[in-house]
Length: 331
Image (cartoon, rainbow, N blue to C red; front, side, top):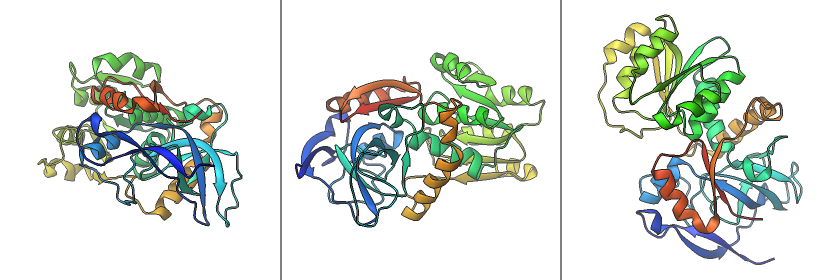
């Protein structure tokens, strides 16, 4: 086996052209880690920010290799690994390193590929479905019979969030651009709001009979915050998972207080290993079975060859994708 592998290594920051390939040393698994031969990775908005120099890997290693989710086969196991064997198919989240032919991950951070999902498509599952489920259900407390408001619903996180809401018996109002309305409806959103032509606060009040929503999943920030508060039900919870519209804002705190509402900020990537293991294990128990039943499925907009990683980043920057952009790395 070669001691070198092909990977994208960031040596500078900027546009998609800074994504350059190098032959680097294959990482060696520690005693509690597995080495994975990566079949596919998927793009996330954080990858673009990292490339531009705004979101560095919180756990840097010798080489700055982007990529936060993967699917592949186990190529080697550490001396203390009990859960996996060479040849097993796995997927998971990492802080970085998925834009490479091989990577290492703690054995309990890896998850089984659910029945009904191919190895190549499984790369589109871990980051967005864990993010959406953690925000809506674990932190937001969404349950059957309640209402959620999901912004950027045509994105990877958004398409996952719509499906999770419906799978647990909750109702969901989705906001998106005009070209993504049909896709959000097809995924089961109860109300779809084209943010370019309609007011999601008004739509929310109409749909809920004036009550408002119990959980808001927002990746926009900026002036959405005041409007999210206006759309919130009594004791509702806004979970902020991104700030695509800007994070340095002022808002009407006085409007939040009478509702006894909550605002939480969350990230997945910067969590310590123990928390990543815990959320991955819980996700495997509570959510992965819903893929096997068909209640959940990865939504893939386009696939690119590994050599086309720059083109894939450029496409994601257009915001035209509905669901995930997958990178095929191995055979």
